[in-house]
Length: 341
Image (cartoon, rainbow, N blue to C red):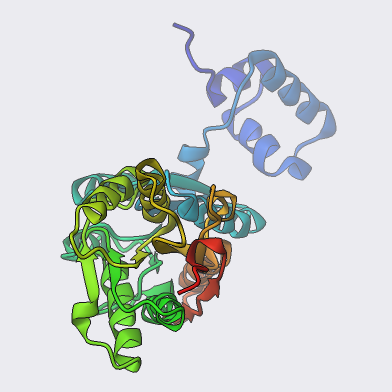
């Protein structure tokens, strides 16, 4: 196994001190041109690569920002990552993207990894509903910003979408289309987003003079297409099947759509469907999907900018004011909900 080349090897090959090699790498203008050329030739000949991690430890500043999301299989979080990466790159930083897979234990492990790596800061969409993982991570003193989650009970910055308003948009649209019995395929009940979208759905029913019994909730363990297909199968088995379904995200909605298609149930004439997130696949589905759009790229970029503001304030020893940014959702109407009732 080949040994890595260190700065001492370069110094020996160039016939200079370790300090001179360090100056060539970090402060080249302080080194005579002939000496600088000799050191650079040795670096090139030996294939020396500077240890960035060691440099960061000496400086006490990492050039890496951590991003921990619920599910990188969901295009919504891919877009969040794109926005965060764009903002980080403009600041000369990289992004370490990790996936908790909606699992609190995996979330805890990745947060420990971020602490070990001394990342500049973390963007986090929490999987642990208890808040214990956040509390444990806070002890490390590493700044973090919550993404797609309001910072309830914490002082940290957060960037989210008004999910209560989003749930209301979805169900108000279905009620206006004449639906009086609606299913809510909700996902894991411990997630704040799932809870808030349900609150919004119930508020839209109340506006129309309809009781909460008009919303039939079908919880799922995960927020993916397979869970949506399972919910669709359960929906098909109901004797008093609702005429419309609102899903907590687009992947669930696409799974429900697949289940209806396999069973010969027409969408939207037999069942109207509304999703949430407006991922790219929503418009490309066999029946284009009505969805509540979240500005995912903007959300990721704004969260990264808030984190950068906080870390720069720490470096300059000036106070940082934590902010909660709440973005507005938008209903995008497509054919999956345009039945004539």
